[in-house]
Amino acid sequence: MFNNIFKKQRYYFDSEGLLVVDMSPSSAVHYQEAVQAATQDAGFSGEDMVINFGPQHPSTHGVLRLEVVLEGELVKKVTPHLGYLHRNFEKHAEYIPYNEIVPYTDRLDYLAAMNMNLGYVLAVEKLLGLTELPERVEYIRVICAEFNRIASHLMAIGTFGLDAGAITPFLWAFRDREKILDLFEWLSGARMLYNYIWVGGVARDLPDGWVEKAKEFLDYFEPMMVEFNNLLTHNHIFIERTAHIGILPADVAINYAATGPVLRGSGVKWDLRRDQPYSIYDRFEFDIPVGEGMYGPVGSAFDRYWVRIREIEESVKILRQALDQIPEGDVFEAIPRKIRPPAGKEAYFRSEAPRGEIGFYIRSNGSDIPDRVKCRSSCFVNISLIDEISRGQLVADLVINIGSIDIVLGEVDR
Amino acid sequence: MTPQDIADKVQKQFGDAVLEFDAEALDPVIKVNPEAWFDICEFLKTDADLEFDNLVCLSGFDYGAGKELGIIIHLYSFPKRHSIAVKADLPRENPRIRSIESLWRTADWHEREVFDLYGVVFDGHPDLRRILCPDDWEGYPLRKDYEVQEFYHGIRVPYKEDWEEFDTFLKNPRRGHFVFQFERTLPANGNAKPKEKPSP
Image (cartoon, rainbow over all chains, first blue to last red; front, side, top):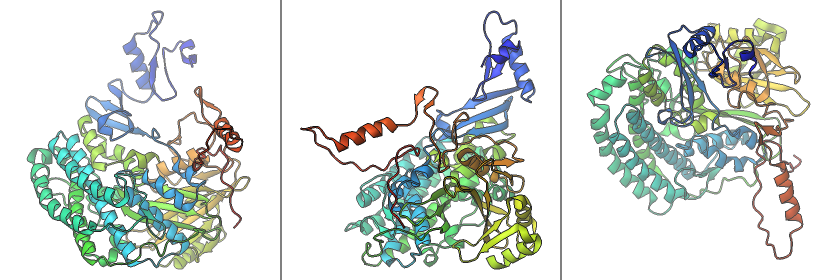
């Protein structure tokens, strides 16, 4: 550990890559000189400064640690360090039966647990060849997924405003999100980690009166979004703050395999619900909002925010259609007694979660326990763009760029 | 193009490097020789008829203790709207394969993850470090024969003894003690005994 110091160098880098300087009185090297020597050795000019963002920092939306190289106030390089929430979901999944994995998927993106449930369950159903499900189950799944998309986007746009310095929109967004969580609590008993969507069905039928309450919520919620837009989206200060930073060109987004609002914000009209329809999404009419570059270049932080705002409106459209059409039926009839896919099968299923594509790659070995479950996480892929979109910008904009990508560390670290 | 056409085209270009093509699979997959991994990926990306510009997912997997490791990529093409999967088997000892990070930037972190959890070394990767586990973690957790390390910076990692103690307690409950059977589903790091797998 102290080898470098014995070699008459007064500094070394520890296992985390942090600079440690020998500050003992016997050290003849001045601290400033040592720092300069170290930064030059690391390939930076003497003007550069390395600062540490997180893991305990309110603007990193969880336990994300960023190592930022600054030149003055400009960002030269951002190196994310992940894993503070790593619990190896994939290893857990190799020891428990298919249906018992569903609660673990709740903990991936805990702000959109229904969508995580749905993505995993659809992957298992693909593996089983289970395509014929009761109509009511399909409708309930779509309704839950879209409600959760709204709840998740409300969190995203609220905290994005918070990153830009607007406190009130965050509270307004949370007020409406609470109402969705109340609906889910009535439905599944839990406010965030639902374990509601099961292989072949759902955990329980909709309670009496739930559909009416859900419609009531939509009637209440649509005017609230207008108010929200007046408060934040059309706010001149907010637009000026966000419309010119974090520019992500479409080809870079595709090369980085960005998905969800991050990809659509760059103007790529791509949504798995429309382009590779799963469940019953092909029955509903809805638009795919993309970034339009209304106030600045296409693919800015504002465009990603704007796509989320528009997606909330589209989700409301889907919900109105689904709540009107939902048929009666038995939700348990297709739940398989034993989930035991044939040996040696593998399936990859992609579905559209609020933050992008959630993909599950599952290999079976003939037993009721999977051989391998890989979760392709949208946040994990999207946050790798942070260096690309923040380079050359102010350090204050870095916070907004993180907020515009909208990560959940439970899904990044898995 | 259909998966069969894509496989035929790759087969025509690379001949023996294509080991097999499974069109019956849920996601049709081409199995290739790891030696030709990079060249085939480059062909898939740059060929005018294929244009796979989107690397959807890159995952590693393990065929079982003592067997080979594997790596699989799922590709999609935005301009052509078709998809394919490509996989390769790697030896368990010293698994190496050429990095495709220069073709799709997204492979950067995916490859680091496979390196972290399976120990596959990607030649030519610019920054091959562990990504989810700490830098000084020992072993590759997702391998089937993974044994968790005893101590990490002075913290005891496995809870093996606790489980064994609990097991003996369950089998010989003392008089007056009342045993609740909780569900045991948490062999967290592969150190606890897995549930007995039923024969297929």
